[in-house]
Length: 277
Image (tube, rainbow, N blue to C red; front, side, top):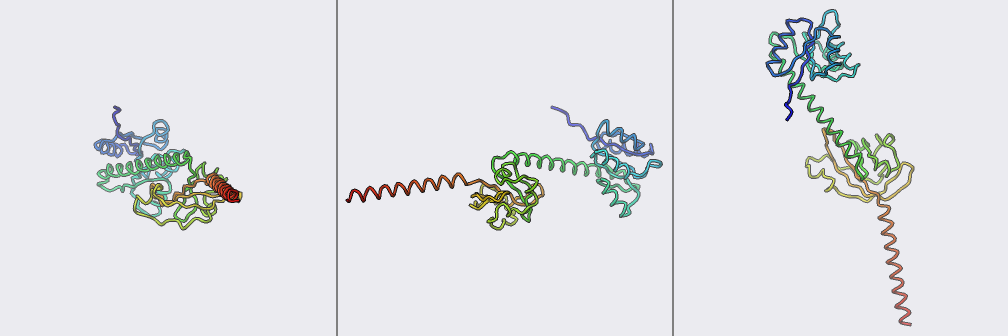
C-alpha cells in the first residue's frame, strides 16, 4: 500500500525569521514546507516541483506585491491555490486579490500563526472538493457522450447546455449550433418542463413520463420521437435531462402491420362473399 504523503506548502516570505516561524507552525500541524525568499525563486520552485498550496506575504520589498506574484501564476498556467498573509483589509485590495486568484486571507495579527493551519486546511479541502467535482463532471460528460441514446441537457430555462453525439445525429444538428438554443426548437410539442423536484426518485429517468412527440431536425425535417424528461440537479447545476428515441422505424412497422391486417381482413371478407355466392 502506498503511504499517503502530507501536503506540501510553499512559503514565500522575504524575512527569514518570519518564514521560519511560519514553517515550524505548519510542520507541527503535519505539513511539509518549502521556503522561498523571492518571487523568482518561488516561481522556479513551482515550475520544477508543484506544491499543494502557496502561503504568500503580500509585501515583498523590492519585488512588487503578492498580487503581482499571483498574476504571474495565472499567466504561466500554474493553478496552485494561494493564501495571502496581509496587513491590509481595504475592500479594493481584497477585490483585486480575489481577481488575481487568491483563495483566502490571513490578517497579520499577533496571533496569526495560530490561524495558519486552519486556513491551509480549509483551502486544501475546498480545492480537493473542486477537483472531485471536476472529475465527476468529466466522468458524467464521458458517459453522456458515449451513450447510444440521444441525450440533451438544459438549464432551468430550457436552453440546451449539452447535446451528445447520438442527439447530434438524430437531430442533424452539431453541438456548436444546438447549445444555447431553446429545447423547443427541436421538440416543438414538448410539454412544460417539470419543475424542480426534491424527491430523488422522481429525477430517475427510468421512472420519468414518456411522450410521443414531433421532432424537428436542423434542416427542418419532422420525424416521430419518444421523449423522457426529468429534472436533475447534478453537482450544483440544476436543469433537465431529455432522452430522445427515433420512432420512425417503429411507426413504419406499425403502418405496415396495419396495412397487412387490413389486406388480410379484405381477403377474408372477399372469400366469405365468394363462398356465399
